[in-house]
Length: 308
Ligand code: BDR
Ligand code: CA
Image (tube, rainbow, N blue to C red; front, side, top):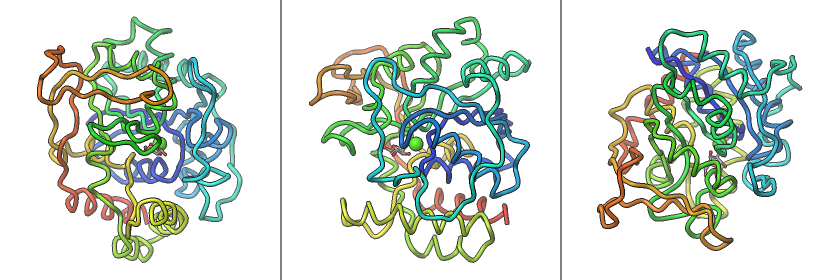
């Protein structure tokens, strides 16, 4: 069973990814680390704890990490996730403070304490992971793989050609993609093919407290996607990455060279994916190129329903 650490910026789909992990016996969630992304670090950290509180998982440690990208100014996504980062449900304030250590020190401790290797699942900007790799190079060999949500082969959601997580901190992404670690990129090409629709949400709403939380998240989050894309449903990006950790067969991947564009505004954060091998780059990433969408959504619904 993979031992995992979820590094996230909740964020509606981050919260859903967290619930999916909690409902899935195939993964052993060691803890949650947070980063500035969808909202400020203070808010994403509070949100991670609020979601864990909601399902009575006060035993899962939460450690707060970077409050801004490595080089660039902080950018958030209030237009998608609202003022709190988790607008929609009426969740009480967090019941506890995060762990006293910085996220990267917490990750180092958690990894060093285990004989087996650990899988990192980053679903926000890659700032914490890049900082961790810089600070603890001796622990790289203890990382089994990194399965991240971010990037795209041929589209963008923040600019015409860049996805939010990579766009926010391209320098951190560059560090991670060139780390030599086994990296899997779950990008918009697949997450946009697996929309959570009203009938999925209806089933979740009837399933219990955790499912009702997802339904309340959806009520706010889906409005943005209806407005911007005209979709009758919403992508649950981060949960797709988690789904792949739980069941590798849900995604089809291609091993290819990926370069992160750290250039100026227009191309900032673009993931150049050499799918056809035209550049002859050394493969450094397993890029998701296909998804069994209905099977993924079924997994999501059944696992979150199990939480009651
Ligand atoms: C990614 O950006 C965030 O808004 C989501 O939480 C997801 O991680 C999608 O581009
Ligand atoms: Ca996220």
